[in-house]
Length: 296
Image 1 (tube, helix red, strand yellow):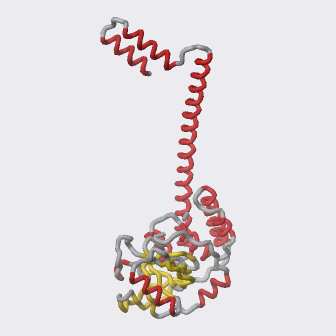
Image 2: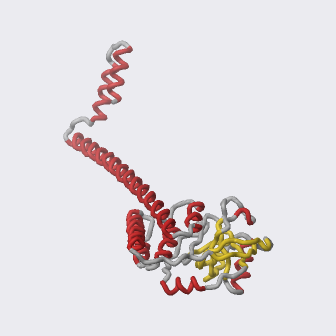
Image 3: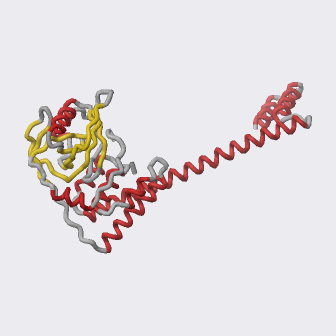
């Protein structure tokens, strides 16, 4: 589990905040901000780095007003000036929490995803993309044993992966355990999965909760297997290195002991044998065989 944009903030969404978010009205029009390498999910708070002129103007304009924008992922990170065909049609309404001007000229913006939308019609592309949008309504979940079992499985597998990975903060497992909302749990885990933008976009666009949960569990299971394999390889390499270091240390000790006792070290004995061999009148075959054995 886990940018153009940086790591996730561990910020949890309470059930009350989620209900309030669901009840917010979706604007008919939104300024659309394309992101490289990042898919924003509802409820999740992330920092993004804004460097393109169009994006900086969009953020500045929105920050002076309602601080609400539409965030979509780019289909390819290689496109520097994306047009409507270069971005996914399903995105997330975002609230700009904070904006920071950086010394390098870029702008870092803290945003929180609100709810999903689908682009309906492009109104203009200059100075940035403006579009009409339709909200995507989340279906209310019915509490039952299957839902409880799904949530439990998601939390257990995520926590196990966090403990297995040395690069993930331990606070992440505490955050996972304290998430009460099944939908936000899915969004939080999806946002932090080590998968492609296209795979995250598939999760974002999936409407049915059970389908999304199944996809997330599949990704988590694959990630767990990869981590187990990496850890096994790391352990084997460490054992091999430890054995080499131990053998080297023992050989050095043996040489020191032999020198203290006045005995020749193995290296010295080999050198003496080479010197004596020079005085022998062997044919080429015998000389080659001797040299080969001495080199072992």
